[in-house]
Amino acid sequence: MHCTGRCSLMTACALAFAVHTAAAQTTPPMKAGLWQIHVERGENGQKMQDGNERMKERMKNMTPEDRKRVEEMMKQHGVATGEGGVIKLCYSQKMVDHGAWTDQGSCKTEYSNRSATSWKWHSVCTEAGYQGDGEATFPDAENFVVRSTGVSTIGGKTRTTSSTRTGKWLTADCGDLKPLDATQ
Image (cartoon, rainbow, N blue to C red; front, top):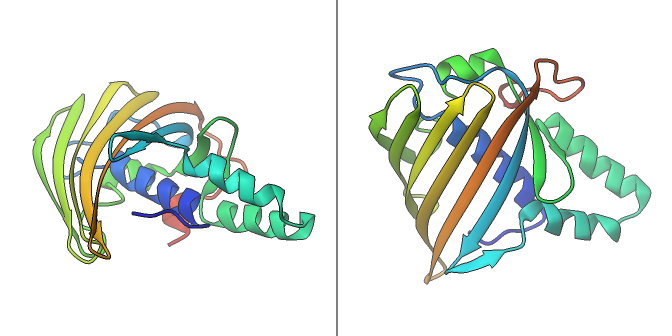
């Protein structure tokens, strides 16, 4: 997928969905609340500048008013940006309990493992021209790591992507950041 100005928001949504993959069998050992997520991405074997940093570069050239509007829009969609590829997301208890992403849109996901500490899956997103595999590990209720790889074909070009998302729970109180499930 080629990132545009909405890349950070799309990445954040994908993160939220990817973290909650195994709700059908077991509730993930995660706390609800404010999470800090660090994302590392690669495309065709090359490390990519993360979407959050690209967005910050674009925002530097915006007027203060436009920058504030973009930040508010992201907040309304459950995303806050930070330094060094870090974003903050609010996960509600409903998202943790029920899994926020299973079979969203045209994506179909099948799980090969859903244990209390690890989940593995394969997703096919026909409309987006994407398919890939992922694994989430939960060392404890305040940390997770999601690794995924996939292949997408857009405009006749095939891209191989990879990402590692590392999450750390910060607090039960999300402040003025709304949970992603409240924004849908």
